[in-house]
Length: 154
Image (cartoon, rainbow, N blue to C red; front, side, top):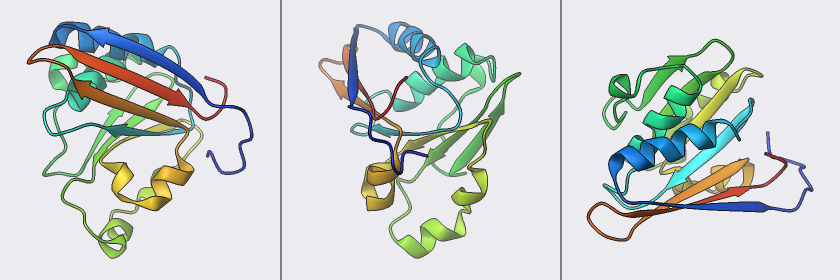
């Protein structure tokens, strides 16, 4: 995936003032993402990572926004679209490399797949291998700042 990429990093920023606007930002981001990609989503609990994924999944026609839920307990949700498969992964409850290996995430790396990994920054591997990093910062109860960094061409 990102290993060996030498392109300069490109950044995009969005501000949203509601959950609906965060979903809309996800739809816009879907137009910038290509498979295969490893996307790390960072932000505090409740920042809106899953809300953003709702828009990304809808943008790829992989799932209706109301069908996208947090994979906190199941760890991985799969959404199949006509051109891209999305894997929404939550590593909040994963603490060790050994636990990470048991998830078999390497098996999900495929030309038609985009991995959207919440809490991936906990592991050095994902900080180095990521193609895109999306950071969501809560400004107020409903307002968010979304920063997107592409390690290669979007």
